[in-house]
Length: 269
Image 1 (cartoon, rainbow, N blue to C red):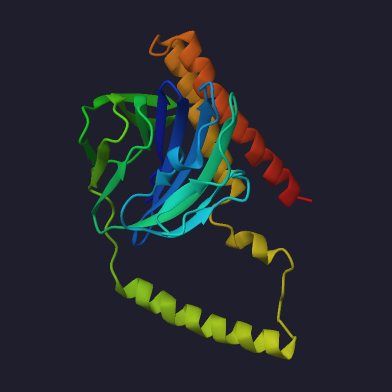
Image 2: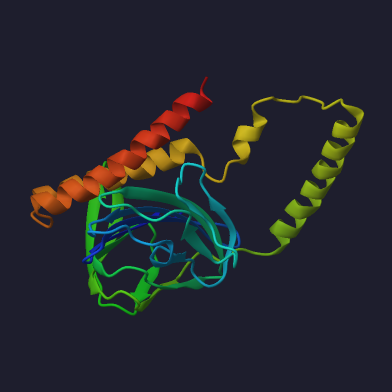
């Protein structure tokens, strides 16, 4: 069972405006999370590095910051993403990262927000039995896009510095023995690979195989972003977003989609 979750957060303070799209997939051991941040400075000054630290949820493992994330890097503590340079006046900076959260049936995603959030949206694709709770009031709605059912939860007015928790229950629980068997098989494959490298004779070697080891395929990211754009467009039609809100959210998603499409094109060459 695969879950697709998008969390779209929008905020604006005197200095910063930020948006976050967050996708999750259920894995054998928990959740795999992909986040895409967009942060823009409206201050009459550059925003210093210290004000741009984005903490990761407690328990995040196997963290990967995309090479496309210019101006951001993993923090030395291994549990936050930090800016490498100040954010200049009018500059928009984007961050894409992935991490895993261990879970057996349920998991909490908790973080202290670095920016005040004017609006937040959680989008969950076709996940019967999964329940979302939060430290913030949630407004739940349902939508269907291209015959795919979504559940949406909206949050509003979350203050900067507030610790927000998303509590997921009803996630698929997986038996341990298939994983143990898979690990044993992987150990054998690794041993064969080491032998092949040392002997310079890799049976059936595929020079493009390294691309399959990327944390998330470009096609999967493209499909999720297209659906997110469709949902935002539907919100404008239904009057849930005004023109400015729609334009801001859509521009952020389309900008990221353009990067993904470019990556797919490069991979195909």
